Image (cartoon, rainbow, N blue to C red; front, side, top):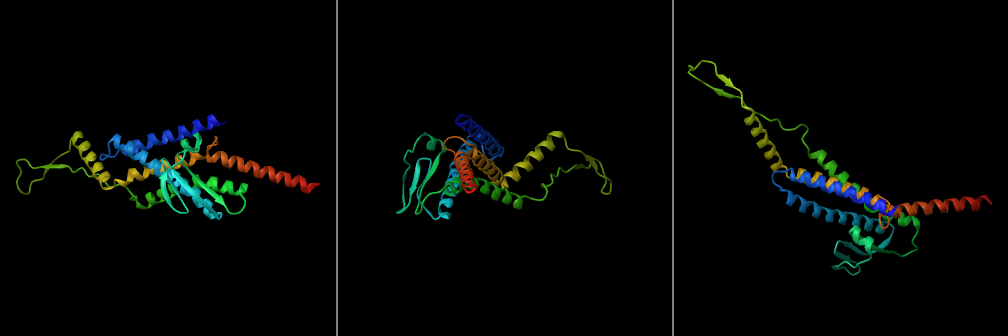
Length: 239
């Protein structure tokens, strides 16, 4: 289960990276190398969103966040201190970030479930907000592409009709390409938002995949323990 789940999660995010790089590189202002660098930077940003989601779950449950790490950087709280992230094992390094927290009371399976789910939910909510923003800012219809006909007056008097020569295929392609480039230049945020949506959705789904060290595995174990506890109480009350 662990190797299978890890492979599925990796494949999900690999496909998302390729799709995000392709989306960014489709803009005439972004070359493939820049698109790859932007996608990698966005990945660390989304890891931050993910870990902030875990931290928000801890705070909502009246717990205390001791450390929040993203990649090689960690923020320690109480008092605040920024430094390098400690190594907590192979699984945590592969995930790319972690949150250390404590609860003043006792820790329960319900708390584990909420904190584990808060990270992927933060990624999915972030993708939903970006999708809503895209829907609001997108024009109702695409801007019309106007390819004017070329009016040529040959040996005509002032009141004589014009002879209309249709543009060649090459000119049509050139005009459409120029208009598309102009629209993308004016809306450079468009491919960036789409790439962030793709990566954020992938981050949420990949982390929900059950394998050792993933949020999906924590959720699976918490649900299993809660169901076993419910069955135990049912058997106890039936006596």
